[in-house]
Length: 338
Figure 1: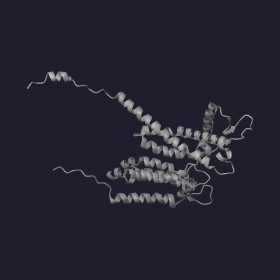
Figure 2: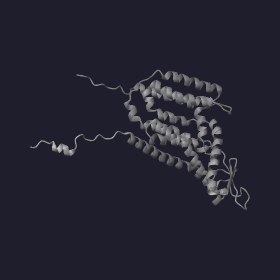
Figure 3: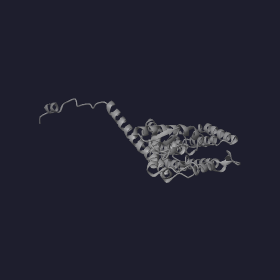
């Protein structure tokens, strides 16, 4: 009698190894003083993240506090499939761990936390492959990629902010010219030019960092990645939908500027925008939140277009149905009488 094949499944050793790996990463992030930056003492990577997540001066990276819970939820959603898999530890994880250790050490010696970010990200990759194998890593590939959003890449702010300011200003000016509104641009500033009134009498809006869309760009990309993953099957269709996040974010930011201009015209600049000495007004904050509905609605619309295009292509290339070789009338004439 042939014996049925059984899978080994997860063992106590696998769970212990996973727990030890998570504990090691937690120590690297939470316990080990790592980089000082411009401070007088070294901070842990966890403290560096915490400072950025709760920075009252900038909201660019505040969404990062949601990344780990979302990543954990994504893994939890795949728990049934993961439990059915058999861990197959691979020694190929060791070279990745070696590279991760080297980068982590270089960042520690150079007082540069970006190397530490990359090192920890690679520690997670190498640890999964070494302890659990490639198959399980492929199952959690998307959560691992989403974990990249937890790291605040401050150096990108200066590189991206100014181009965003220019694109947002030029984009909104196209609509302003079409509407014939009395608004002009000077660099990256928007100024009212109503006849009979002094320039800037009711609108003097400098499109600086917050108004450039920088404050919400990475949060929008984080949300867009989630929407793209669940809205489309297959890596290429998801990548196409995710690539639409940047133009949609720019469109949403232009809507924000349009609402600010409208608010200044109707309620006055003090109410809609405030001044440089005051904090962001409630109207200004609510206008900024409008970029998220624009992004989600835009992605849903584009997703429907992709689904429709794929369905039409499949229908066009599908072979025609084979018709019956013998017509119904012919079959009746060939039937044998009783």
